[in-house]
Image (cartoon, rainbow, N blue to C red; front, side):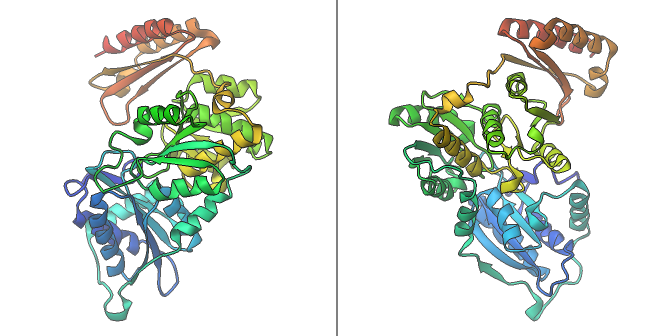
Length: 443
């Protein structure tokens, strides 16, 4: 069996790769990994609205209860809500059934440890070992786990995210694209509670339409809606609402990099930006670094993936980090990215300053970026070839401090990615092509 866990839980096509049998085995294995001394251990289980989530939820719960774990079923809620509620209910662990921004046929299982924290690699490996070995002696009679619905789950989560509001958003009109996903109920309620006038779109999930031509991966729908309604801004979530991207009043996209710039400046002004530092991945645009340098804010850079951002946030006790994709993490408000908290903070900053989103995002000037993927036989060897390193060094010298070049092997394919940012697109394209040619000539 290959490794089950990817960068964000176990994912695959529901009922093909991710079967009910596998979901049951994962629930059972997670239960056997528990260390709580309590007589009755508790797990929180939530999901997004995918039709397959009903099947997988039932299977996960069967695995948990078969091992004597009681289940608090929170229903359809965002991933960050399940992470928060795992801690709020003092559960031993939490399980979220979702494939985030992936299309409907996919689904996934994400497991949180005590306090709602993501599992480390060693714990995931232990769960995989337990899946392989199968169940041991199971409890019977009164020792079998029980299931109850947590009727106050949504209210608890909404009360939690309300703490992110620093200035009421009265007078602001926001269009929110819920992606027919887990945010469809929670997001409009949260933004209305913050004082905004809310126009919700794509907020009618039927189990089949999640992320279908909408949400954070299809911003054109939101762009048109914001302009048509004359709204102050638009907010777009993905299927499980751990991401947020924005659109200004003119319909222009405000991506995760620009959002991080807006929030970093806001948190600095509020005295909340720990060590005056922002954490971002190597894929964030150079424009973010330039904007932060101008504001005397340090940027700590990590590898690609929210888990690396989280690791750096914890290691340095920083208060803000994220990715260009809109996955923004503020440890004061959760153990994972929370798209609704991000949206509330954007609304608060607009209300506090009286500025438009376009004006707030203006310090972020995105440099033209060209990305070329070069297929190779051995990505690691090619990436380290002397002639390739020379080509990269020459391109870096030509760019100076007006741009940057990033060459990295893909994490999932035999591909070397060449990314160049420069003051103009022609320069970026010429240099990217030159380095890509040196990569392909090694193969």
